[in-house]
Image (cartoon, rainbow, N blue to C red):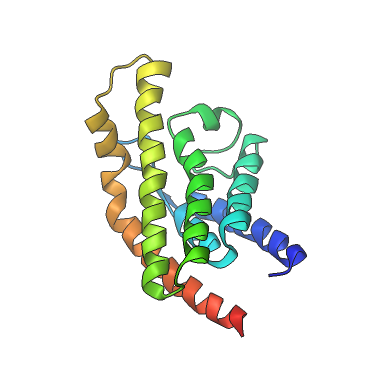
Length: 180
């Protein structure tokens, strides 16, 4: 992909991630909502690759940090240090790893899906650890790690499995189209 086009697409995917943040389901037992952000994050990684998808996630986070209401709960720098800050950081890491895995190995549909699901697991690992630290260190409210895992990871497995599958199918087809 030529650089100007790639950078433009990174911006477009940042906008898609922002729109996905607005499509949310608030969970009464968790500070982490279910959103469609990850669908577009997985898609960015599958189409753009490691560097450009990580750039897309960074653009999205910078827009929110500067105060634009692109996060699921609004915007501003405090969202980066709030309970979902680890998930936002995880977006950049997961996008890079997913793109890296797809670039380095077979580009079969099964591998693209596997890469995306591994990225989801990594994103949640970062998010859950940060969530646990946020409550125990920042709020000084004791939270068991198992509880953080229960509210910050388990509810997202079914939906993100489906999002990875949908994103993998779309990315596989787009990559095939772009290869022509």
